[in-house]
Structure formats: C-alpha cells, structure tokens
Image (cartoon, rainbow, N blue to C red):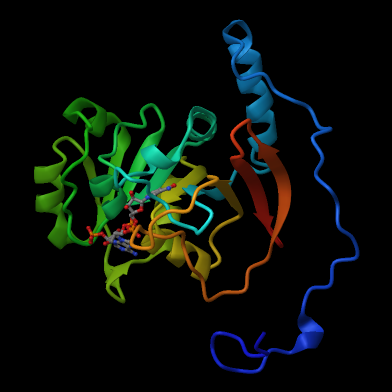
Length: 259
Ligand SMILES: NC(=O)c1ccc[n+]([C@@H]2O[C@H](COP(=O)([O-])OP(=O)(O)OC[C@H]3O[C@@H](n4cnc5c(N)ncnc54)[C@H](OP(=O)(O)O)[C@@H]3O)[C@@H](O)[C@H]2O)c1
C-alpha cells in the first residue's frame, strides 16, 4: 500500500480515522414485509419515518450504484440495476420532496418521466432535453428548466410546456447555490438531487449536500457504464440508516458532518 494520496502528496497517517469498534450488522433489526399489499400504507409509513428530513431546508442526493460504482445496467439506464424496493424508496423520497433536481444528461439518457406533483428541476447549458417522456401538461405544471438565455429556445422545443428560468453562466455553468436559492424562493425547500455524476460531483465539491441516500446493487457493472459522483472535497458523512433486502441490495442514508 502506498503512503501517498491521489494528489501525490504524502498522507499524514496521524489523520487516518481510527474506529474504536466493529459492529456486526446481524439481522436482529425490524423486518418490514414489503409483499403484504393489505398493509402497504403502513409499510410506506415505516419507510417515510426512516427517511424523513430533520429540517425544513434540506438537500439530499439519492442514487443507485453497482458494487463497482456503476450507475446503469445493461439497458443503459438505472432501471435494469434497480429493483422494486429501491423504486419504492425512490418514490417515497420523491413524494416527501418539493423538487427533484437532475442534470440534462439524466433526462436524456434515463428517458425521464414526470415526477408530478413533485417538481422536476433540470439543469442545462444546451437546452437539449430530447428523449424524455414528459407530456406538455405535466411539464407546464411541474418542470423548471434552469439554464442560460441561449438554452431557452432549444429547451422549449425539446420539452414543450416546461417553465424556463434564466441564469447567468458562471465558469461555463449555472451557479448551483443560485439555483437552490431560486427553488427556496418558490417554496421548494425539500430538495432531492438524483443525478447524474456530473451534476452531483459539483454539489459535493461545493458542500451543498446535507445527506446522501445510496442504494448498492449486488452486481458488478461494465467499466464503460457511467459512474457514481466524485469529489475533491473531504466531506465526511455519518451513517444514519442501513437497510438490506432479500436480494442483497443495501440502502444507506448518510448525513454530512455539520448538517
Ligand atoms: N443510478 C442512478 O441512480 C442514476 C441517476 C441519475 C442518472 N443516472 C445515469 O447517469 C448518467 C447521466 O449522468 P451524467 O454525469 O452523464 O450527466 P448529468 O449530471 O445527468 O447531466 C450533465 C449535464 O447537466 C448539465 N449541467 C450539469 N451541471 C451544470 C451546471 N452547473 N450548469 C448548467 N448545466 C449543467 C449539462 O447539460 P447540457 O449537456 O444540456 O448542457 C451537462 O452536460 C446517465 O447514464 C443516467 O442514466 C443514474
């Protein structure tokens, strides 16, 4: 093992975290029955309680990755990496949020559907939103596209009905704190950022995430598939929740130190 960080500078071993214990996560916790349709509402409440944000203003990421951190499966979307429990948690987090934030490439590649009644906020410089499956009526009532003035025409051409919000470009992109400020001014305070890597890496680097929700699928994905976000900032996250399902998927909820 090398004693150098990625940057090539020697790592100060005195700063290496030194856990005082290991805890075996044996399955002694509560087991939630997901198959009992009669009590589906109670099961949803159980999940909601575990994912409830602690404050009115809260920004979390929610993503799914494989064992090697890849975020799409064989069909080129996250659908083929996911399962119904993962989708249920995704749906409930969306329902508890005022707005879902995504980068334009996620809209194009995932062939995004409507998140209504939760708002969908798409961040773009190009305005190209081709590939989505959102009807104009849904776009009009629940989609905000945030980009520079030069993206307006293309955005409204590729997503008819959507609401375009203009931002100045700052260093080639829109400034994410300004987008968050705009969403809060509209009363959209519970925010979930769903991807992809390019967008969430900026949220991480700018220290804008209070929480990370991440599902780990028990597979290795192809090297060429897109990856989970990266960050140059040393934010530490403490685990608040770890769930496992019948098929070995793990569901973690981690809160940023200081959030
Ligand atoms: N497993 C999961 O949970 C999950 C979730 C979401 C996505 N995905 C996958 O991840 C992939 C997409 O991720 P990605 O990293 O390629 O792209 P992305 O982050 O979804 O989108 C990148 C695009 O967003 C826009 N953008 C990002 N930051 C911006 C800023 N500051 N200002 C203005 N525009 C900005 C730009 O759009 P323009 O190009 O329009 O300028 C940029 O090209 C897809 O394959 C998708 O299927 C997986």
